[in-house]
Length: 327
Image (cartoon, rainbow, N blue to C red; front, side, top):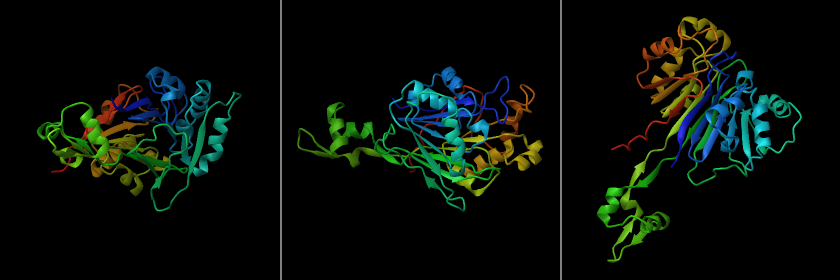
């Protein structure tokens, strides 16, 4: 059975707190498992969440501030220590390559890890870059989802990511039954060959017993001011993971440091038609229970009516059910 869920490893921003670890998120999407923004302590949080190093198929870093990258050193050494056999690509803004290399060689270890660095050049004008797959990357299957990146507006070079599953078709059990195709091996032959000749000589075509299957999509918009690229990343996604560093009463701080407020993140999601919004990356200035989660939820609900999660460490957020095909 396919697994499609977000595992939240950490939800703090610049400073971890007693309740919140630095950033870290693992998106499970069938054969794909992407670790986004491994902040300090990510290796331990993976253990607490039951996420194995062997699960990971890719690491995607939005920018090289420490709360989004310091955990890379430990995760790389875990890949080495567990002798993960598949190649794990690491994507990041190209200007951050010196820090990525330093983190991968931050201490003495045997370097059994198999990683492939993928620095992403800025295409300009907020354009999208398709992140290519690499030889040895696990999960290279037909109709694999596409990962794209767009440059965001932060104090250092930063990108946001979007994962898109292509639209497809699936067999309709009612149509199969009406056509006289019995459950079992005949269904597999119909899928493989595109048509099936029944015992009475009738030919059933795969297209005649299939229905449209809309693809699913997930976007990660971390440290940024509001910008066109953030809107493009979020456009129509099933799940948006968005930074929400400040409440809107501190909008001046958000502008100064290149972040979103909770209200801005919710407006972004509402304008983009997002189905489920996950808010995260909270400033250490906000306390539990004074501000988190209630104040963030109230502020987001002023402008966003879809499914909402004010994330906590070790939350598991399933993707919404697949959209029904139009018509």
